[in-house]
Length: 540
Image (cartoon, rainbow, N blue to C red):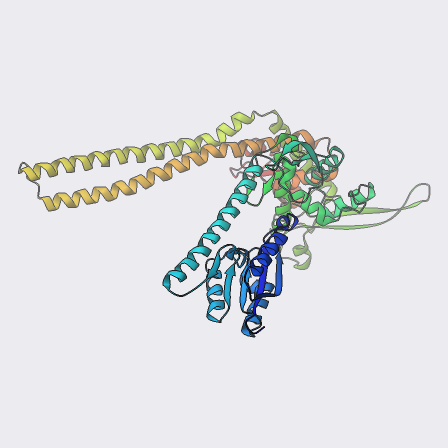
């Protein structure tokens, strides 16, 4: 047994699929046959790596490689045998040096299909590195091919795996993969889709938050497929998931809108995202709580000290004619600064909710009635025309100046030819200075023309944005009269940026819209204070 060489065998496959295809038994049989063909060789240990990538995982993360390295240091074997050298790894910046380490430490490294890896000269070293460089390249290509194929499938609107969002189910429609195996596609689960639509409607149009939605669904006995309630975390995930607009995503890649997968329209989804963002960062614009019986939350201020007004309630017991007792509750918008700092705010300490909300409600109805009868295209065109005309003028002026400078450069260049021929009175050095100066000016004007063009394009594109804004406000106008109190509260929180209240219920209202046309229409509501500020003043 003195001449017996102890052999460690390493078998590795990168994926579970290769395990199922019996790739490891094939490697093991091949290596055992290879050992049997070499008298004096004896298998001492066989190590297995199942589903371990030789490209993505370094040697430090691979238990089998670490065990082999430790046993090599302790002299427990003489030969390391693999089916192919790339079973040791596919990292071109690591694997070739590990192989060389084994050989330098007295371990022979063999492949059952490629022979022994030696390091007798520089050529051997080069060939060793090239082998793993090629293996690394193949891994990258395979990864890119796989990723590219998945991205192509996603862009084409096909389901490529992963968890199924609530509202959808898997369906076989006859599509097959390259192995001719039928695969699944996404389809809308009609019953669940109605719940998704209900969630978005309550969130966007009635001001429900995730916690309130969770409670509402529980009260309505609406549960998840597993029988459990919808927690607020699940509802937040639903609100943020773009799949409901009919868009399939895979990492950074996404499909176009697939109509047969669309449960929520894009505008409703975008509104939901803005509401969620504003509730986190702009509490004054989007109320966190819509359950109270006041129209204004967070966007009402004292016109005298400019501090925020807060809602307070109070009341007293009253006796009816029949002798029964009831509680008369009254709500007020109170200026806490006035109460806490007597004499520093010359406004009222508070204002009745019922009276103030009634005034605001009339103003909103008036504004929305004007909006509902206005021509959206005319308003958008009027809003943008001044900016577009100005941008066109800038671009035209810069273009004309550039053309003049280019003509000037041509004149100087022609004059230079005359200087060479002795037909000009100009000095060549002086002419070169002029040419260089004009070239610099041309570069600056080209940048100016480009910037002017971008500004013009931006204003043209902005018309689409404002058209969407108009449609949103038009929707508010259509909904306002017939919607719930909570929905009115949500509309007002987005339609009105701020309300400043002065003595005797004189109001200063700033509307949260970009259209000057709407602000101009609003001035018709004024009962007094006809100044030129683009704000609305109403006297009760």
